[in-house]
Length: 515
Ligand SMILES: Cc1cc2nc3c(=O)[nH]c(=O)nc-3n(C[C@H](O)[C@H](O)[C@H](O)COP(=O)(O)OP(=O)(O)OC[C@H]3O[C@@H](n4cnc5c(N)ncnc54)[C@H](O)[C@@H]3O)c2cc1C
Image 1 (tube, rainbow, N blue to C red):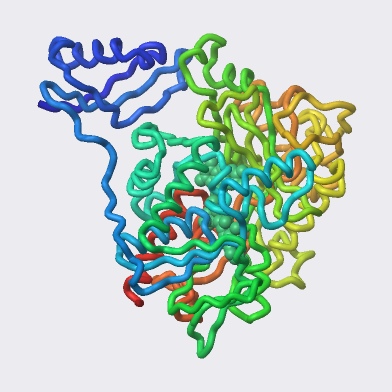
Image 2 (image 1 turned 90 degrees about the vertical axis):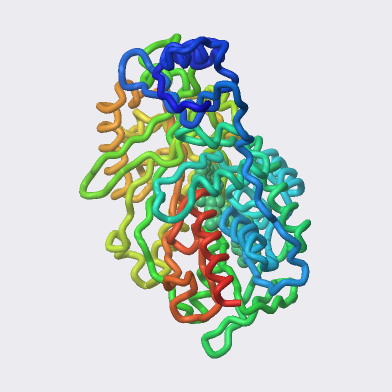
């Protein structure tokens, strides 16, 4: 016999299997001995009242065992099947490849960066030397920007595809069971590299190919049809279907499209800073007590305000995490955030970004479709020039920024490459500064204590979304070029790991119809 029930219990009881069993038995009016197994279907925290609660939806099994939650995907041998070339091995490219295999086609992935193991060494070297390796970093390499990301696997794009199917594929490749039922699934940066390696292994073991250190430098097109790509090492890969899954950091790809007169469009995006608080402060604000945290994960937040007609919002909040240098160029600084599965550091960081519309970029009009990209680049260069050399990032106490004051010193931070005190209010664009300053005041009204001198801001969080869209038709192909499939964050139609993965899968399904 199987039952589905919902219980609302204290965080302490939710951490105790015997207590959960007792609550379930009481709710079902049966004895605990009758319960043979319990499976969590959904778990969420309700921290609105003074005493946070845990909501659990449970499947209760009496006299029977649950079947394994692990879905069994049929990854077949595609060695001799028709090929599709995928440029980029981020979530969009990898999930496109896995879906192609499921559909009986052979993916050939071209990735400019290195495999995960080599990439790890380059990232460690970058932290030590404070200098970026332009081809092997937090954005480029096996698994793309997803590999050393925070690994939050939730998305609001629930109309785009089968979110649960993506989670199941992550789970199949080594992600923990919790991602299948947590309301905000999170894998953590410590687990992702192994999961990515497992996905690549599936691709290769099924007869697909992955070529690292293979930067695509040209797309071969004749009569408005794609026929392959050329790499900067001179190799040419021919295919009737080419998937462009290069992410939004690959500026050279946008510039290539522009040079080849392949249509792109400027789109709205967002830029700002990363704010970092002591995690204990955010825990106290969100959980209303110093003790609740003992049984609860590091607290997060999601904030939004309107300021001078533009949205200002938190982005990629990483409780118990780190700030990381996520630039792809040695003369720019971009920061982002990540955390391990334990979310255990003393820091709570989040991007706070300001909506930036095309009409806000009058000074960049001469760059036409690339106007947003050039604006992004300009503030990333300004961050570099106002930093301390290499990836030593410019930072300021939050209250000093809001009061337009220089910080004589900085609080402790998780940012490993080092910080330099800098007057961000002086060199960030004024339109961004005034909105951030006002929004931080509004956020403090929503979360009392948010605006504090114990917090700092680090510049700049400029790559939260793509400033360019590569227009595509309903078959995921470029509007003007047959066979050129565009997907993922770089296409301007997706953002984040899960939504880019779904986008990649959809591309594979459209390719199946073409070849
Ligand atoms: C530090 C950090 C933390 C993040 N945390 C989260 C999170 O918790 N949750 C979330 O949803 N999102 C997060 N993101 C964003 C997420 O990683 C991206 O949205 C996602 O990876 C986009 O997937 P994609 O496949 O479209 O592009 P990408 O992941 O950017 O992958 C593109 C790939 O293409 C390759 N490439 C580029 N140009 C070429 C070329 N010319 N030739 C060959 N290969 C090329 C790149 O090397 C890269 O591997 C984070 C990002 C960062 C940097």
